Image 1 (tube, rainbow over the protein chains, first blue to last red):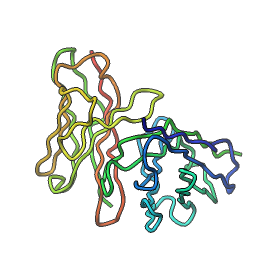
Image 2 (image 1 turned 60 degrees about the vertical axis):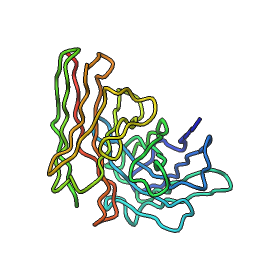
Image 3 (image 1 turned 135 degrees about the vertical axis):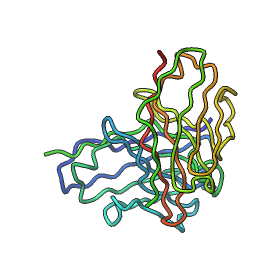
Length: 120
Length: 108
């Protein structure tokens, strides 16, 4: 069965950096695009970034463009999110999610999330 | 950027039908997806491509999409359906994935 397990969250000071990881199993990771989606405490879902199955295309929400970088290592079945210049408003649970089918515009599996807290 | 508008809350008695709307400019021309999120849990896909259901999702969950409004319909509502529901589309004009603000479904 499909499993997505995020890690790397924690407390970081404003302006700091953090790298999140998402370990995937139960499907052919190298065949699917992957997303990061976040949810601030008590708030709704916000899409953050997408990377194509082969890493050839990446898209970002305006709120993180220029600060966050999505990447993947298909040999390790792992998705990453490098977060730099963190702000208080980046505080959220970060989920990785798999695209439904290649080119699909929905997310069919989600991880349990990892909490990132930006605070001094 | 594209905006999706959902009512903050919907209440329904057990056994009745709940309808959760998602408004957007000409949303009928887009594929709409719906997610259920219970407290402390990750979202779960319940309807994709306007009206298709993933395996394991009860037939009580259905969707429609036309004009400026998409609708998630939950028939014969059960206590276990109480959750937040989010609609989502892909905005081709900005290459971004957009969520509605979410609707809290309360089962009375």
